[in-house]
Amino acid sequence: MSRRAGLRAGLGVLAGGQVVLGLWVLLLPGLFWKWPWVSHLPPYNEHLLRDFGGASLALAVVLCAAVATMERRLVLTSLVAYLVSAVAHLLFHARHLEPLSAASAAGFVALLGAAVLLPAVLVWLAADGSAFREPGSAGTGRRHE
Image (cartoon, rainbow, N blue to C red; front, side):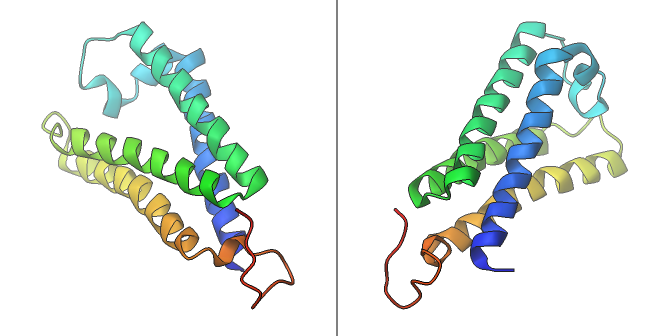
């Protein structure tokens, strides 16, 4: 798999995850709230959950635009935006695990850690710019910017 294809696939995974999460929280906040990793920090706030769902969909729009265009600045901006959210999410929940069982807490931290690791790897793939070179332009130094 080429660097470009791997980057596009990873962006697609992140975008798809945000679409699913955003639609779930926006359209069915009560069902999302029943998830044990969410409901252990009451109280339920439908407004806040729907706002979170909308923000997740907004991030999905930016990630989808990055997948579609593969424009370097947009790709890097979308990945950094995702990382800011994912790191803040991981740090918060890492400090609030006490109501969860050890196994549930370990699974949750692993999931949130993966949500940081994947975009970090994608930033690394995107950083040198080779994934943005036009096909057939190897060695010319021309990139899509």
